[in-house]
Image (cartoon, rainbow, N blue to C red):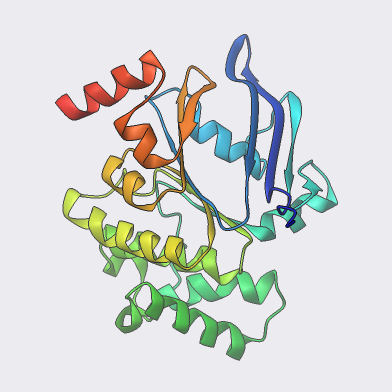
Length: 248
């Protein structure tokens, strides 16, 4: 009998407060290695706060988060955890004075201690992987929003992280640029990368996710395989959310 691998991400009784406001209520969640999880929910439901707690971009007051068994806490160990957790933000957060290649190569060079030649070679491979082989020497200002976000994805991949977190990666893009970013993410999902994605893209979630999580008011209301989630949601709040999305 095969014993399942322990979860790559383990979240236990996580609570996050802003003053008297409770943003996350006792969240318990396991994410397996290679799993693609899409987190849905209305604005203010705690989706982004949840994934930002995984690498401690947001401090939390109660509970614990572990990545590959390592407790995520302030201190020397935090840099080690963050090196294993790639993050792609809504705004691309590229260094404006560096070319696409330099943006991607910087992490392996500084954090992983890779040689300049090896880091540049790796950056070139990753830019090709996200469809930007011909744009390596352009500055961010010379790239479209969709291209900048693909550079940001390549930069996250350059660290060879154990998990990739995406915080609404297409929300700042013009509609015609959304597809090119989602295509890259879909290819990553097929390659077995562990991904946690906060998104409003329902069709993408249905195609790509192994599991869909629905949040409301800082709680996980419902979760399940995408086909089950979208065709037969169990909770009234989930049903109302999906109905509103379809009507919209």
